[in-house]
View 1 (cartoon, helix red, strand yellow):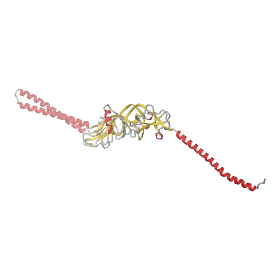
View 2: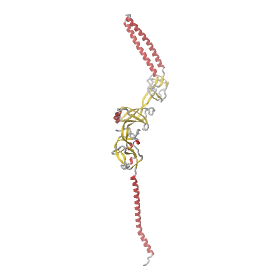
View 3: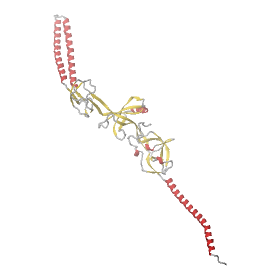
Length: 413
């Protein structure tokens, strides 16, 4: 056997290597592709599996049964219960002003003093005239008595007696006029002391001491407003008139007054009346409530939010107002099952009262509903409860503060 040349062997070896190299590259690429596919599949599975199993955090609330007050809410303003412009009832010079601006005064308290001397003079004149005319009346009575004796003795004519009796009657009339003049002078003297006609708070002084005031002056001396109690005027839709009238027939209705933002309670009172006309421009009904105001938290022309307690629903099913959702088929809630999944449940509910809503049909007492986090839910979604044991009362079920759900429309029963 002949030995092959070294150069030929090298050529054969490099040719075989060139033949095997593409095959090896193909195998390597196939293995690499399979590895990448497996890696991608594992990553994709890891991403999908947690997303499908992820629980949506929600705030739960328990359906409870309790008594719920039904309110009608409206925007209104405070009006002084009484507003009196204190004016002089006689003419004269204003000598003294005995009040401070903004002072709380009582009924009958002296506010100002007009010079009383002219009225004292009138009183003395009337008293003097009365004394004179009484003396004349006494003399006339004596004359009549004498005439009667003389007529009985036929010493004078009957005409003389009749004339003296007429004079006596005239003198009696004059005496009564004098007595009335005395009463008038005393009344003017009393009017010279200007007193407060009501309990209230004085405003800005309109006349300074030293000025001559007249009974015909329009401006007056000061304005006194009664602030305890005060009146609150507020409006409600005219459609609520039948319900309000029916409830008023059973007794007084309570009214709660809050600040304009509805946060601070300012007072409680009673509904006094329903206005005798409906505002056609706004289709609203005006109501007036009387509210005690001993601490002066309410002030005239102040904007407030009034809540009329119409009635109380006994043993109603209550959930937080935030649980109610609205869809194409109506109102519904998400109910949490024992397996921590949610189901969509259609319900019949009245308009929210403050922060709670009354459910007439669709849920049962003790069921758990979703109060917050519904935007991420679908029927069958897994949930995790953020607060364990939350109930309708815990989400505003007992709050009497006005909530966003009222908006003055009231609640249908």
